[in-house]
Length: 316
Ligand SMILES: [Zn+2]
Image (cartoon, rainbow, N blue to C red; front, side, top):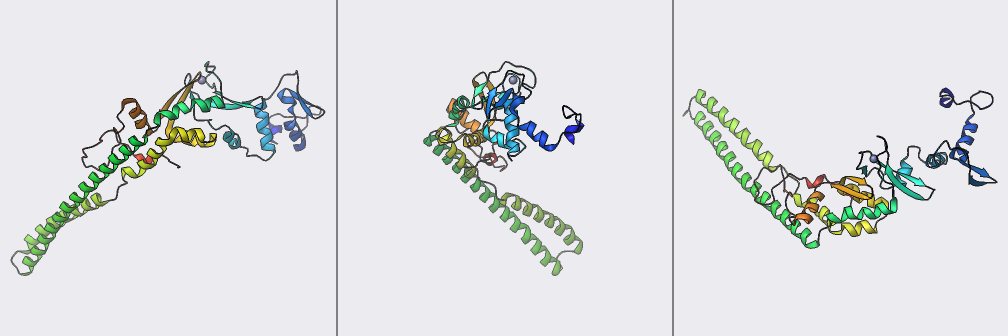
């Protein structure tokens, strides 16, 4: 019906094509420039109308594969991970000669001169993206210990504050109690009581709100960080021994973007992997691993850009 509306007619009698005719047409490789000769597909000399890739995708759908490209996407593990450094377009993947998968710029903004790269070569290149987040076990332990210490400092601060607030609360309560006794024994006037008791009630509410705020549980920075450090210790090894789909998961975790330019990659890392990369460059692995930017307690160690270590979607 839709095919008819957009102008598909039977070649000889200008009628609507039947479903089975359309099915046969979609299965015929003649439109790819090939033709079938006694059951064997051969390359013809005529001009093709559709690419081999599109033809294969249609065959997948006809065989009952998922029609929305998800099936193909899984076959090209690094698709959507890279952008073209030259024009900013996404890098896409395609199968060539039914054998090799190549990644290339989609070229939506016109030809940009970027090169093609084979999937195997790209997987190798991506090792160089993973290597900079790798840290030694000693450094990982050092960061973990520092974060635990900073958690302890924060917890100690909180306990001290709560003790102080409890003290203030008790003082206000006893003022209220004493005032009420004075009122009952007529040592103070009704007017004085209503004025003072209002004041004390307001004080009490303020203190209780503050207690609730300070007592509220906060995620410990060392808890989320442990998984990240564990990954960082083994990043290169993990990457190398995994299949492409697992490799993609790892790359998605550590990369926020990566551009490709004629065989060279330029990665941008997610937090806090960016800190590890910078640490490896500068020798200072601790900067930026702030324990808890919302805690509001001045900690003496590792203050810097706020980092929420739990924001990284870890799946290990
Ligand atoms: Zn491009």
